Image (tube, rainbow, N blue to C red):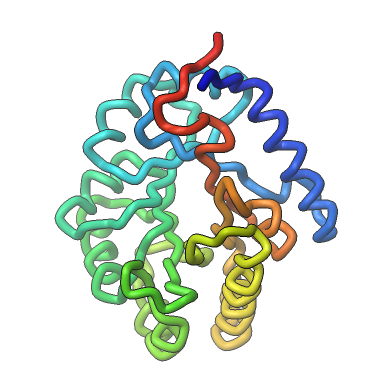
Length: 233
């Protein structure tokens, strides 16, 4: 399959803007994250030349090769499962971590951040459907551990992330997006802190996520095409 990056990003931006308007916002209120895992530095550079700034990777080994080859103006987000022994390396490469999925990991990340002298931006990953195959805080556990979570002062915790179950139709994901937004609102009301970001929605359902309040959407296939696709230059 041939991929026209310019056409794809224009289509995604149009869909995002329409969904934002539906929710009473503008496209500027939503960050489009291009999920660039498995794609080469050349392909990422081509999308960056079309104005894309935010990119997301899920594998440290792959990211640490590509990121130094690319323009420093790009912003990098880590969206994969974070293993504690890789925390220091990930902190050195990524501006934001979307996948802090347990209190133990959060506390480890805070310790490593203090040693490294950094204050990373992080999102708390929530397992909204209680799937055994997915990482993340159960909503009830997140609320129960909230005081301990917020005690990790070294981390800039400013939102939640979720990956709903795979669904045949985008609309099926809507209740999970609503659930994440409501959980965010409950945490804000209980703690008095502001959680500005909801990272939710991918290629198949990001317009629904934006309608329900997403501030970050993680889009890969809709931009880059399926694996094995050939970029049109």
